[in-house]
Length: 151
Image 1 (cartoon, rainbow, N blue to C red):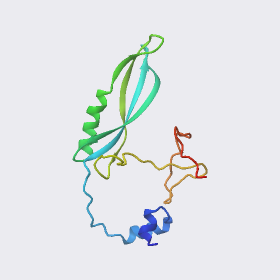
Image 2: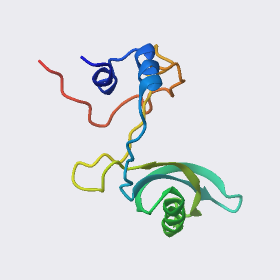
Image 3: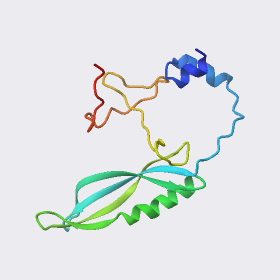
Image 4: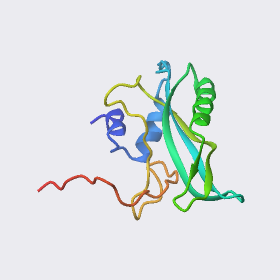
């Protein structure tokens, strides 16, 4: 298997990747898909003291010629989600946009099956990626719909 193929399949060592980096020619220009996944954060505030009772992250798709345009569009969209609500016990509250957690450009325009978001995380006992960069812990620890076992 070539070094490049091994790196694509996640089987390359950190040394292999450094070797690829040293010898790679970067004359390939990647066209923008014009689409971005943006992770927005909201606080659910309750009562006159506006105590935060919950935090929500949402990932929305936005279009834009570049990241800056997509960020502007994301802020416009984010404010549309702000709202007021009432708790079951009658207290009033509001959903307030807190900010943008992350933005990632899609490789391809959205269609059925298009990857919108990915994040590398560390399973138990692992702290860094193949290059030694720190990884966040897997979260949430449990999945809503785990894969069926191969038996």
